[in-house]
Amino acid sequence: SQQGEEDPQALSIQEGENATMNCSYKTSINNLQWYRQNSGRGLVHLILIRSNEREKHSGRLRVTLDTSKKSSSLLITASRAADTASYFCADETSGSRLTFGEGTQLTVNP
Amino acid sequence: DAGVTQSPTHLIKTRGQHVTLRCSPISGHKSVSWYQQVLGQGPQFIFQYYEKEERGRGNFPDRFSARQFPNYSSELNVNALLLGDSALYLCASSLLDRYDGYTFGSGTRLTVV
Image 1 (cartoon, each protein chain N blue to C red):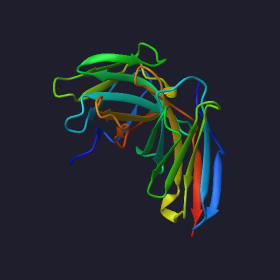
Image 2 (image 1 turned 45 degrees about the vertical axis):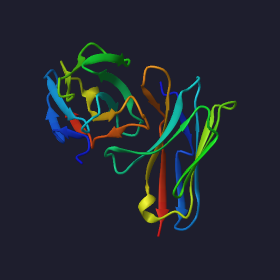
Image 3 (image 1 turned 45 degrees about the horizontal axis):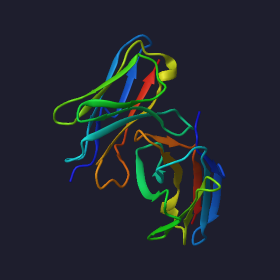
Image 4 (image 1 turned 180 degrees about the vertical axis):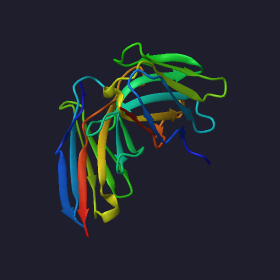
């Protein structure tokens, strides 16, 4: 079964708005990663946040990590139609394997 | 620089047949991992190889096997295919030092009929 769970499962917003996706996990982690997937193709790595970090930025992306609540959030600011995709969180524990959630389908309407 | 390359892109097989999927990692990446993604779900870990040694195996039956070659490319083999093996198979490579996440290939879409 999947360890991570994303919330919401689907999100539809207008271009220029912010999009927030949440992720929960169940065990201790080394790091948590966010990936994007367009139309069932390969995953694109967006950002990695380590267990000793609380917040990280990359361009229009902001990721937070709360290890006490075992949760993370991904914020995309000033969204664009090109941001339409599925977004997955994946936690990495020992053994260098990623455990993915079910994903959030983001639709950005022009 | 070439990314992670996978072949073939698409594949249709009949139940009971065998399939081999191939992956070439980014130059300099010695770690290769395989994931299975069933439609509508997140990817699930199958195997990880580093320096030609298996470092991890997910909850998949023995019909699934893999290997890594001296040039760090990898093959995933699936025997006695079942309809439920229909999925997108993703390969990912990474550095183990200066690690900052995985680079995924575009995947192989396997359909079992």
